[in-house]
Image (cartoon, rainbow, N blue to C red; front, side, top):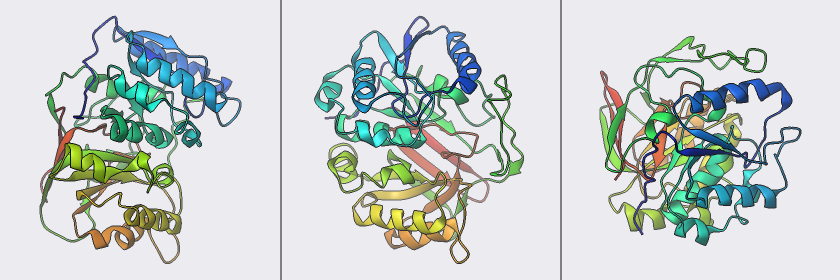
Length: 343
């Protein structure tokens, strides 16, 4: 089984919207409408699913969410599926999805991050289908800073396409909040923080390559050691030269993140990593352990480069990463970049 990249989207193609985890509340409906219009302005037809209720923490019963997501991903008339955002308990879909059916279907882009990592990462590992860890539907109206791309740019790329993203040097401070409920028309992130990538494990230039895989620590840690998160088997099949693994903390404190990363390492998630990319986070430190120290405590024994403050987390802006793409990271005193090749 080799990595399968969905065919590039063309104007007139259909994009499915469903919420495999949390739905959209009435307070966020205007923002959803704007996000849908933003996609339609690119020339696509949006197909809205039934599993979108935002009155609770999930949009529908697990069986209904699993059925709708599977139906959209296996419908040859739908070329991408973009949930509104993540949530809390997408893990309840993992045993309910028809993995054989997904493996046999023509590949379709599945886009998202946060709780969606619970689904997109296993989809790549189990079926070989490339998935897109990046800004979600509700983020789509925001303009993308120079150096980065949107998921809307990447789903039009053909197999073999190579693209490079660089940190813009600006990000939203963790204490800043762009209120899209009160101001659903917002199209500019408040990027009031400054800074680029940094190396946590030492000093010196870094160049590393491998297929990309990763996601949110708080959600993926619950799959570590199961068949749904077997990165070593994936590397044996698709990337014997090794992997570039990326992780990011949403909101858990440093003690919890430290424990989770230790557990993921002990379960083998990082065994084939040539380097680890760590997303910028606003998650809290503890009095005797910072988020950076938590990462080093858990992942330092890997003896591979660890690059922090990458734009692949919950702090905008977003650097989309294609699970299954071949990646090459360069980090020096004067240059930081991630190049991905859809091959």
